[in-house]
Length: 197
Image (cartoon, rainbow, N blue to C red; front, side, top):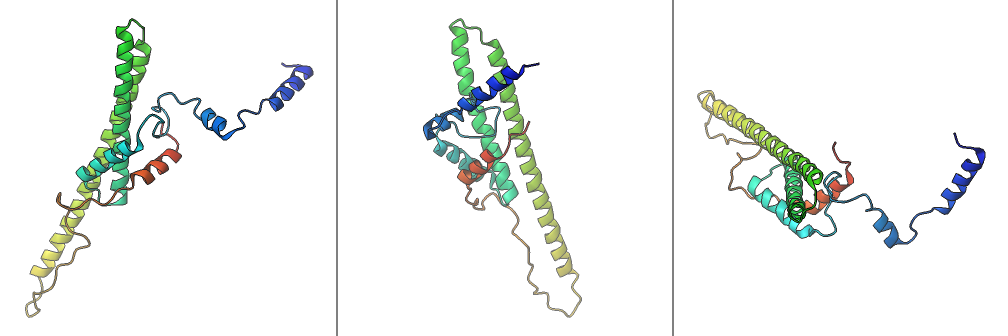
């Protein structure tokens, strides 16, 4: 239990300890706890190129062909996980160099391996959710098609069978053009959300 004199002294010291006052100092101070960017919410680190992240997101979008906002979000999550895996590979290579030089870094390597496993799980979880979404969309479209064909075939005699089959959206094909992704916007949104676990 602290005495009254200690409590008074602590309050006075706290008043004198105001932290950085310049914008540059505040900016630097805000990054004090960041070491590798693997355990926090996603962000591009100072030594990483945001254009490379945007390019990665675009390549995944072209490959996956997202056709809804939800699928676009999943593409963004896959890009983040892949980016973290690349970051982990760089850190792992540096740690292995230090091991070869004789340093004991086994605890750091074990930690990096846990981050790698988490990033891989994130990637495959987002990919599986994307494929589930795609399958549900395809099943819904196939049901619409079957219903329209059945209505057409079972139209009463005497009615013109020139009815146009209408669908809410075309069946998904790999040849369809991917919508433009907003990877920079996604990155800003993702950075502002708290990290999961």
